[in-house]
Image (tube, rainbow, N blue to C red; front, side):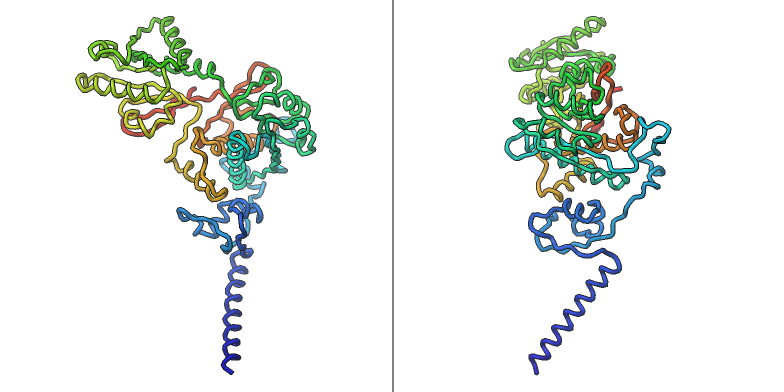
Length: 462
């Protein structure tokens, strides 16, 4: 009798428990999902056609710092909040599309998903593959974020390794259906891909530094990379505008490995042509001679002839010592993109000397957008982003978000020009200009300014 009573009570408890779960599912959720081994938040959201935000909102415990998705966890699966195309024109982020009937060439893509192809080395064999896998993950995160704006994306990816047969990859029928292809990483694959996108009227985004002579003639190509020559010319031009009322001081740092001679000699040549006076000094100079290079009546801007951290540290030490005896000297430091990697070592001095660093990117670890994407990356892929600068996942996110939104709005007429829509980049600003009669090149650069009030601002080149 006791045994029968025990079974009866167990049956009642099970019935009640099942009833509670069923009631919760019926009222608020589509159902429950039991996490399997190696499943990710990104994969589960895709499985149920949800955005990551929708899945997290239904399971708020997943938003807690340090949360890890584990096998056997029970997740609530909400109903998807689909955005209707009819509502898209009223969104402030997605203005209404031009009429496809009046001008098909400039119409956006509003009646179907944007078709994206990724042809990069997506493997774990070497550094190229691992970096491009992280970049591709950033692309996928952008696609997920765009769903909230009603923009759907069909993604096809191919492992375009260095030794692959690129012609064979391009025979895949899905490749010819793409609106945009991101790639390649290797110069030797450019000729075949250039011919392919021109034949099939596809936009091609080259995300990194490769030799692409086809840019001169192929109007379908976008190239993000800017050569050191282009960057130097742009930086010199904006330096002369920004510091026209400053006294320039060039410091020789005795670095025989330096590659900054092209910049410093080009800057000095432009100054001489414009009649701008400047002084030269050396890190090894005695203080009595060193201080003579600085103006007591004008603000000084200091330019080193190296981008290395050890010499930068010596320069700061030298200037700090000089300031003890000459506290009234007004000094601003002008640096190089490499200095962004040295912030842990030199940040206090960056602030102290009002430092300006020219760059094509800025990784701000304390910005809410950066922190949010880093957290989402951990949730989705159970790993942290690589420590490289710029962050590859953030680069992929910016590239995909910018181009997919542009294609959605403008279709094949999208040219990446400034002001087409309001997208604040997380790390990598983009602004393209036509290269002769050929493709388009990114011309976006900025000064990263470490202000004396310990704030950091980015000043975009106009």
